Length: 472
Image (cartoon, rainbow, N blue to C red; front, side, top):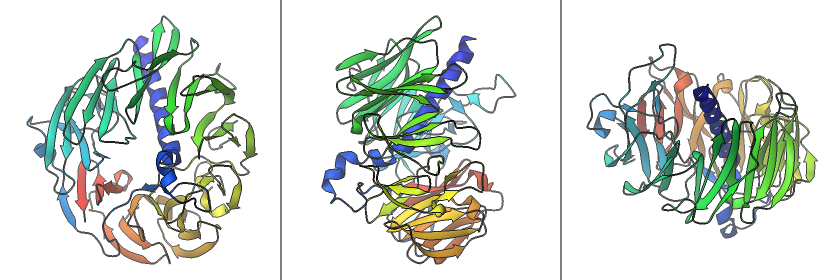
């Protein structure tokens, strides 16, 4: 029973980490926003999925990652960074930190349950990979009891943790900076400047006490340790340092509300407000998006809240939050919530367009595939088109027929083009007029559901299952 409860707790914590990662799209750049002239939309200029490759012509494959070159141990496999480092699911990938691709390798152990989709692994080794040629730059053995590494990283330093162990690695050199133990079970870590925020819980029978600590890479509790009201419910606590925010949540009683939230100031620890509902995530510059009454296929009622919890406005067309998408805009980004664009500071409505939501699939979700220059690229499974909208008005600029518009996913941009994958291959579309520039077909044996196009360094990565290729 304890194992099942522990695994359930891990799933909740991982889900919360993914929510924070999605919401972090805007707030992650706020510390640098003073260097950017205030755009019309009021938000900072944020770049994601940007490559230093001219995408007007098809890039050429430069190299393919060979796990045998990353390890001295025959039989080692590539794990899925930066999470699930304690298990192998039959595939793996790297992730970018600074100018280095970071991989993790380990030897897969025999399955203890044949019905399981994963198997345990032995001692883990982190490997720094040169994005220019795929060769290893360094190898650092971190051993076991590590399940995840930090997803958002301001510098070259990453945190990795599992159970009551936390390590810090400088990915520029592979140096293991510290290997620390804690007196509580860890579920998250955020590094901002010289400060490390860690969160987790202590259990006493069925009672759980959530914990937030602030410290350094050598002393996790150097600044403070805060405990939250004990509870028998599953929950978590996490930080959004750029907006001086701490969010503590726990499960409801099995009906409504689904979750109970408390919002605190990070520096002072003072409670700001409470909320009960299905979700509360950071949005824009210190705002929050809440949802109540959500069920399968329905996002519920959504409201945009100010930093003190007061309601700014209801979102007319509730939708599931958009995932991370490639962006190299020439103006600041608004918040895209439901079918509207909103000022990320005030929450004021800028414009609305039914084209930025997708209602053809299960539930109402975002249709935004990328933001390139002053153009928002959106897809429509119903009309099987890709359209370009003006970022300042929402007006349609062009529309291009595309049979697999329902499967446009992931991608990169060079500031003029958007390159994405679908069921047939990798494709490039020009953002200013919607012209399709080129296509590279998928190899016959590839399952398109596992294909990912993303940036690796300033290059294009084209990966599926255990194949990780770099193009430029």
